[in-house]
Length: 548
Image 1 (cartoon, rainbow, N blue to C red):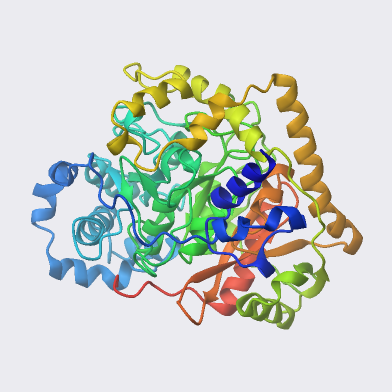
Image 2 (cartoon, rainbow, N blue to C red; image 1 turned 90 degrees about the horizontal axis):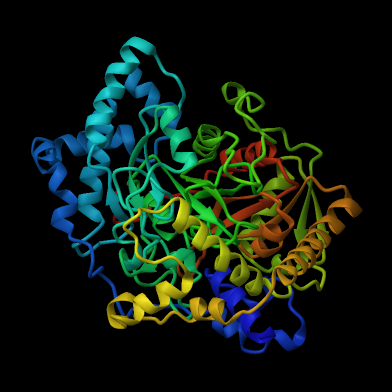
């Protein structure tokens, strides 16, 4: 079980490629064969296109509207939309160069052009809001009479398809939830209250990558196989918020929302040259989101740049009274978005892992930060393990999924438990579970008690905090610097927030990588400010070639 736990931990939550010198520390006995498994790259897929999505049906609500939106108009709008941040988009709207309706049509046209059923298809979008153009027109009318209520107003946002949103099914990528039409999740209500447009849903690694085990990230039965625009069929998308990462990278939306248990925002954000924030657990409401673990789950913003990340986070803030971990550690009132700007790095103490300095992009990022005034302090990763991590997820999901299905799913959904999903999938295993359902079977086989769960949670949190707090306290660090999602497991169990920012592309394959900042709970504003300082000084994000 110990070998299986570490194998699955790396496979699930370190889905982007790692090397021995860059991986979180394991004991010697645990490293045999595990790195080989964690670096396995899927370039030949059992399934590429979804057998359950009808592309023509997806576009039926928009055919008439898009018939009058020409390729010429699309090309004319490119300079005002591609790679633009939210403040600039809002400026173009105010100047009359853009409208929310045109912005929405631009993204719909672009998704239709690139996402499915073509040689460059990415399979990142799983559903579209049939009323989004009508809602965009209402935003155009409202801004004339009411002004700009929030920077997110009128901005088309995509949601990972484990987040409930009315008018579209919430499937978690699973056939069992194909007709799961729901009310809005808490964070979706907050987004709408601030005027955001819900453009649609993104594909994900099915059941947020806690389902099949030996399968590629970015695959779901409903959505098919999502592909990385920086290396289609070559580079991993990262998981489990794969579709969100790819859609943002390909400019299919202004921004997207992902979710993370351990690495599921950080991994696809770094793999797709995005900014991804995993907030402190409880900062963003979680009711109405298909769960893995009520202990570790959190939604979070995924964007092309830091300012958009701050705006999207701000728009989702609010205390969710149906979430037992809900907190108002940062409120809309305490987060002064109007005066948000990068923080001076002079004298800030940033800890770096000695073992990661072999990575040339990481080494260059450290030098850049030092040039900007930060004090870089080398730390050694302690040999601390995260025992029974998989069992935590097993025991949480065994109780948390039935709770979601009972209180937040459509009454017509026939499954009520993990066991029910397993039985359902076996009725048509080739189409519903082509890579198997080993992790779901592991959930059912785990007979741990509530006491076992509490003991596991306590040990993991203690170990996670020890791993991060020890160097922070010893050196009085402001932040710890990592790569991609390499230390996501420790940040998860310690309940530390983390943000990843593009730090460049590998020389051999052009694979994107992210510099990841990890800091104490409720330090999101500072993390965003530090990340913005690095981003603005380096400006390393590039659009994926072939999608401009």
